[in-house]
Amino acid sequence: IDPAQLHQIVWNLVENAWQYSDPVQTLPRVEIKLSMQDTDVVIDIVDNGPGVSDTAMPQLFEPFNSERKGGTGLGLYLARELCQANGARLNYLPDIQGRSCFRISLPMERQESLK
Image (cartoon, rainbow, N blue to C red; front, top):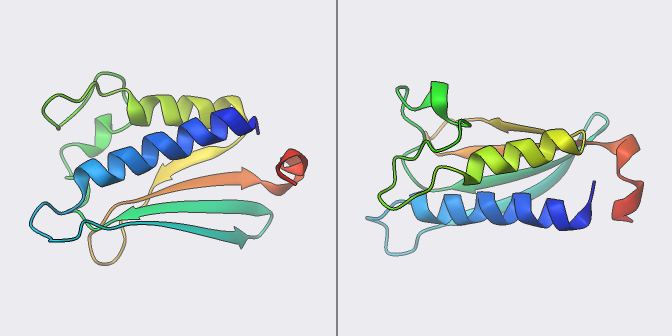
């Protein structure tokens, strides 16, 4: 994967997670978790916000779709497009506590450039 594009993907996801972190919390929280699953390098970006509503799910990765006032609706769209252009996958996985988790899955055989 192109390192500059991976940086942009992670930046978009972290910025989005920060914007949607729980506004009632005194400390909004964004976690980045790295792991291996089968033959994939996995990067999870998790926030402590309310998660994505059922009504927003169908358009989640569509361009110009934002539930945030002042948002462009391009962050998730561009992150997914960059993932796909690099042979990676970007998925939304709600966790058991209802928070948002965006997962980047990078096939290991394509990751020699990350060394």
